[in-house]
Length: 168
Image (cartoon, rainbow, N blue to C red):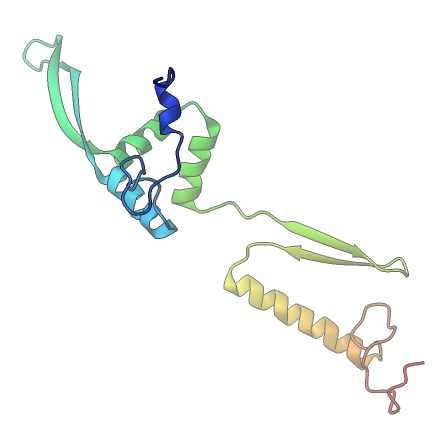
């Protein structure tokens, strides 16, 4: 008796070697192949045909002219982002062209004695970083000379005042 549902005939395992049901052109195997494919698709040219309204210089009246031009998919995508009403598109374009806006990140760690160590991470230029490092070095140097071991509050640390290395 023949099988009443022919689709169940396809519910068998793949054959070893070539099997016509196996998709060999599927998803790229690695990130580089995927990137290459995205670039290929983005570089494809689109043919755009549209009617453009122009003002006739002789008569001063508007008239419509057919315009045909080629545009890559990347260019078309950027034009869509520029004219988009979505704020994320405009933000992305601004960040790509003008650089990201620096955002300060403050990390606070509470110590058992109630003091806090705060580290602020901000995007700075090299000159600003060099000034901040010099300022930090002078503060740590003055604390070390005062016998605080380089730790605010003056407690503990390797200040060099304990020859035995025993602490307190």
